[in-house]
Image (cartoon, rainbow, N blue to C red; front, side, top):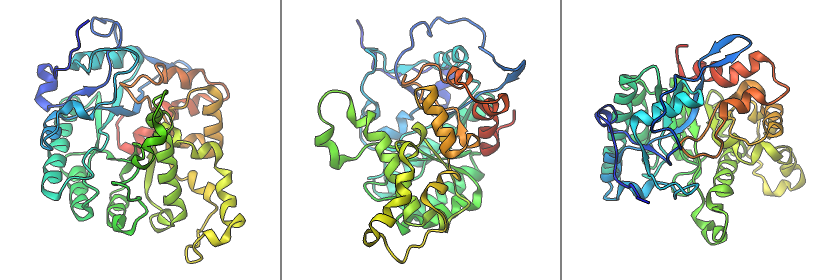
Amino acid sequence: MSTRRDFIKTAAGAAAGVIFTGCNMPGVAHAQAARKQTIVNGRRIKTIDIHSHCAIPEAVALTGRDPQSILQPMVRGNDETFLLFEQRLKAMDSRGIDIEALSINPFWYALERDVAARVIQTQNEKLAELCAAHPDRFVAFATLALQHPDLAVEQLETAVKKYNMRGVAIGGHVAGVEFSNAKFHPVWAKAEELGVLLFIHPATQPELASRYKGNGWLTNAIGNPLDTTIALSHLIFEGTLDRFPGLKICSAHGGGFLPSYAARSDYSCLTAPTACDPNIKLKKKPTEYLRQMYFDTLVFTPEALRHLAAEVGVDKLMLGTDYPYRWQDAGVEHILNSPGFSDEERIAMLSTTAAKLMGIKL
């Protein structure tokens, strides 16, 4: 069995310098079927996947690292590291995905200013090139060097106004510093001013590395949703969402663990008032802030999707698959087959909510 760890790009993919990280899907390489169409009550729906990954090898190389170092471990026993560009389109077609919103998981938050600036410029330029070449299939989230907030503000404005980026992908923290820290306020102010979506995709917590050791890939299975839970909780409890009420935030993986146990947050300061800052007076109960945020639908059962919708509102949910990581192969069907939703609610999750937030013409 060969292990293909070279960067495979077709002419179309190479033009933009973009690779699509992940594992090979059986049958995708030779699939010739027409695009799978999503029909709701006789109506053709253009689906938008809000959570889909790629990478820019030139940007990784600027850090002196092997571009493969940013990849997750091999999953499901597959030995292929990257997908061909045509394979990506065929995979989208086979899964009924019309448009992917591409994002890059942050690996640059510890870089010094000059290198970080070059990494971000390279990534945003290459993403913009790909989206311009295939506007009917891809939009992209910009990347920012958040460890240098003044630079990040400039990068954000350039990404939106010059490169037509539809939002910003950020991690769960910036080298251990929470997003609620005042140093990031200028970035959130600019995001609020521009009206762009912030897509939070977590990583893990290095300080818990020893506890994640062992069987089960716990750094991801538990670490990623926990990272989001912590990030959102700080944004709520530190008053960041009161300071920037117009922020548009979408969290990957259904918001981590927070929506599953949200009501406990309403009781923490009532139960232990000395553990809460008397100078921070939230304008709403903590659970109410969840209803002003957005979440992808990457939860794994109909009941989990029903509960998430009940906690945050179905109008705050958008299709997310985490492709090409195959946590859930049937993202569209997950929404179509989960009971209890109206046709219009399914259409909103699959298409119209994301289109409105990201300025996608349907």
